Amino acid sequence: MLKQRIITGVILALSVSLGVLLLPSIWLAIISLIVFISLAGWEWANLTCFKQANSRSFFVLSLLLVAVTVYVWKASHWVLIILGVLWWSYALYLMQHYKREQGLQNKTWLLPLSSFLILIPAWLSLLELHSHEPLLLLYLIFLVAAADSSAYFAGKAIGITKLAPELSPGKTIQGFKGGLFGAGFWALLTVWFFELPFSNAIVFILLSLLVAAISICGDLYESLLKREAGKKDSGTILPGHGGILDRIDGLLAALPIFTLGLLIIGGIDV
Image (cartoon, one colour):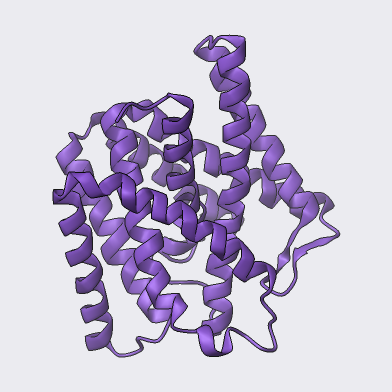
């Protein structure tokens, strides 16, 4: 499984890197729409309350309609991104109080609704980053990958204390710290390579560490979805990784936080 996971990861890394750096913005928007809204939306529907193909198709079409509408309506992009950030603030509260035996009880309607506040803001954030500087988008993708991989190997090697046993028994506090270490190392390499001024470098590294921590929370939120659905993976499309959501869950949380953070610190101009 680890070998298969590595092979798939390398292929994905090469494909994503070439796509981010070489594709025109319109083609990246179309391809990412398929991945973030259509494929991930289909898996999301399957994990929530849409078990029939017809209802899942209607759900995905609804997501696509909203996504395309806000894409055309440029003035709404930052509104949706801010709403996405606010949703993740509430999601942290939701996960903190989640109990496996009780589930969400009368809040199950939140799961399909939250897809509109997670998938669409993440997709818009991706497009905003790419339009301003493709390297920023590529940096974020590898930042999340560094945090995820470091957390995985640190957890396997020294993981003892459970991070969120009600959501994901396999994740540990030691793995979480390892993820932050890996993300911090990637951020340090980046500021060194681009020779950022000291004050800018400190702010950039702190933002990167915050985003890395939030990306792990994105992983936990997908665990909540799978816990409620009684499933191990969101799908089987990616060998060794599961489904699309299993691969982009951390990125879904990281994208709006990183994009809004860059706007606040002056790294992006509106």
